Amino acid sequence: PIFGPLVPRGSGPNVSAPMVSLLALAADFRALEASPDVKKILLVFDTPGGMVTDVNAFAQMIAGAAKPVFGYVSGDCCSAGYWIASQVKELSSDPTARVGNSGVMIGGSVQEAPDANGRRDVNVISSNAPMKRVDLTSEEGQASIRAMLDGIEEIFLQAVARGRGVPVSTVKQDFGQGAPMSAKQAKSAGLIDRIEANGLAGVLSRLGSPVRTATPRRAAAANQLAHFRASL
Image 1 (spheres, helix red, strand yellow):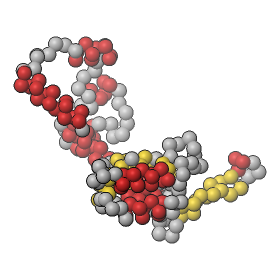
Image 2: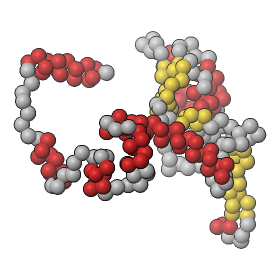
Image 3: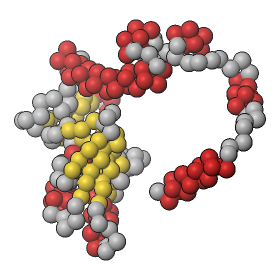
């Protein structure tokens, strides 16, 4: 797992956030390479990127690994995270993942008023990454972000349509268009199937009604499936 901002040695400017130490990652990776029980290595990414220090060295370690290394993006794989992920043998991702954000940025501030509240943040972006930190007050910047959001929204709406058994057009038109609904509104529009008048106690009582005992064959199959899942 590579989950969180990347730092060289387990510390960084925001120590309250869970950090990913490249030093610790490298030690774990060497141990996996040395183990005779390990045939393949999978790196799972959910990282916004991080500091530049030691990223190139770890990426070279991945590229030169003696064993095949694969990557999977569960959430974000951006900036320094994608630098590393680009070196694996095969990189796959969840349909809703965000990948890329290549480029380098450094931040600073300038004094515009007498006290500490009078400083304004300034970011400098590398030459080939003009869209890395867009101006969200500009139409161009908002269009760039909206294009990414629309791609994720498409997957979201398709999943909702499949789950509720309706066309995507119905989800777009009748499911609130992004606004939350009351339970009564949601029931009327088809977002939910029922409203529980007695709350959680009611649904527990309803779902806890007696069920038909499974046949021995079905019970055996269920036990075998449970055992298989446990072994996984």
